[in-house]
Amino acid sequence: MTFQTASAWLLLAASGIAHAQPSDLQRDHASILAMKGEYIVDFAFDETVLLKPGYERAPAVRSGGNEVVIVVEDSPKRIVLQHLLVDGKSGHVTKHWRQDWVYEAPNRFEFSADQTWQVRAIDPAVNAGAWTQCVHEVSDAPRYCGTGRWDYHNGVATWTSDLSWRPLPRREYTRRSDYNALAVVNRHTLTPNGWTHEQFNTKILRGADGSQQEIAREFGFNDYNRTTEVDFKPAYDYWAATADYWAKVRARWDGFLGQAPGVHLKTKLDGMAMIIPLFTQAQDLQDGKQVKDAQIDAVFKQWVEKAPE
Image 1 (cartoon, one colour):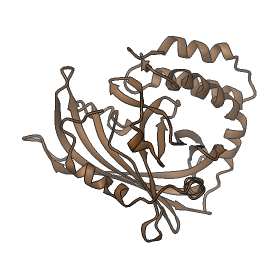
Image 2: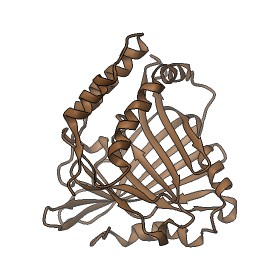
Image 3: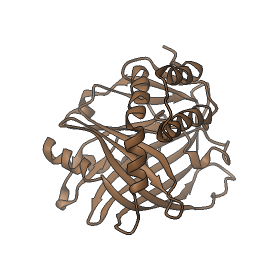
Image 4: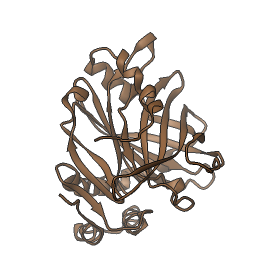
């Protein structure tokens, strides 16, 4: 993928890759698994450099929550981590994002156009000794992937991705129409009390003709701090009741994302046309009702198709 106007600051943010040592598979594996656990999370997003003439800096965004990270799959070269949010007062559980890690993955999906992700081979020079992290949203629909090596310089475990595209984050869907893509470098770091996720974002308006107008740069910081003060039992109960269901949903997504050309969603950008029925089916299972495979298939048949070649 070529980024004609992607900002040099993002490339500098990835400079930690240059210091990476040859991958120690077991050590990397343990670093990824170290992200599991129970956390209080703070989310912060700040626009920094303004790039479009006349553009005014958007207000800073601050939020947070109680989040548990559960290991769904664990093998030497593949780890799947599911995030679940729990409301501290009501105990309500929301299935949140998912991160898949694959060692020297042969390909990955890449956000290529609105509601379209194309599966492309990963450059062998980038992939050697590297882990590809692919992030999925609450419905397990694709969001973005990044490839990079774990670095242990000065005893700090840090993974830094290459530069890749992602769609607008959910926090921007309803209030922004002046850009339609982010060029992003992601960095995960293990800390004494948890881990952090840094995002070095450039907001870009991509045109159908291939043009790109940079709007602003943004720094995102998600801080995961371990806690023993929150009752996460509702999240574990939810996952025990619905894990098999969500495995079926993931399998259907994998049918589109496991090989070229990829996937195109026929929903609006917010994806609610799929989120609502899938969440409803999961709730039905938790309530002791039955959900047939044909019901899952019907959702995918209505809203999901192969990406254009």
